[in-house]
Every structure is written in structure tokens, then in C-alpha cells.
Length: 159
Image (cartoon, rainbow, N blue to C red):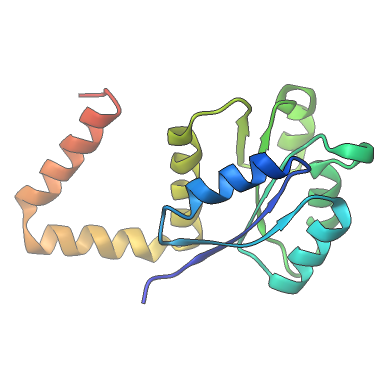
């Protein structure tokens, strides 16, 4: 049984939240368990559903920011991984660094970057999954492993 990344998406723009959900759920390792369109529902979903990952916007209606939410969970026993997707990253970059947020993406973004970061988060949360995959590939066929690596580099234009 593969580990599933449980995700809450928080954005006051329902269309953007739905677009992110649709793209993420193409990856069968991910499950969006809730979408929040305001601060209260974001905290409620985090507390109730205990997601591994919260994708949050920074600037939202009524002065609500993703930073406010992240700060509330900094010292809690339960602390999900936060991934910021926002047009206002530059305005908050020092705060993001102070809070040690590793994952952020500026709007507008492309789907490749979104899914690359989701994959990185998945591998950080479930590191054994990539180790087991690589070990199986190496055991089964060393040539297949190196062909897979070369193909990945070709796709990103590095080979």
C-alpha cells in the first residue's frame, strides 16, 4: 500500500483552489481532503483532518494571510508541512525564511513546477518510497535504472 499525501488547499479564490486540486489529484499518491476559502475553515480543516500538507495563499480577503496560519502552527504538537503559492511572495520573503518555509511558488506558475514541488514534498514526508523504488529498479535491471535517469534529464533539458 502506497502512502497517500493528505492535502488541504486554502485560497480565497475558489477557481484557483479547484484548479490546484484537479492538477494535484492527477497524482494518485495525493488526496485533497479539503478546500478552505477563509481563515476559520482553514484552521478547522487542519485541526480536524490533520493533513500532511497545507497549500496556502498569502494575501486573502479581510486581511487574512497564509503567514498568520503558519505562525499559529509553528509551535503546535501537530504541525503540517506548508506550501505557499502566492503572487506576493516577494513581500513576505524575509518572514518565509524566518519561519523556515521550504516550499513556495510564485503566481503565475506552471503545472510542471507545481508538481515538481509536490513530488519533493511527498519524498520528504515519505522518504522510504523513493528509496524502495530506486532499490527495486536497481535490483531488477541496472540498465533500466540508468535509462530512467537519462530520460528524466532529457525531459528537463539537462542532457
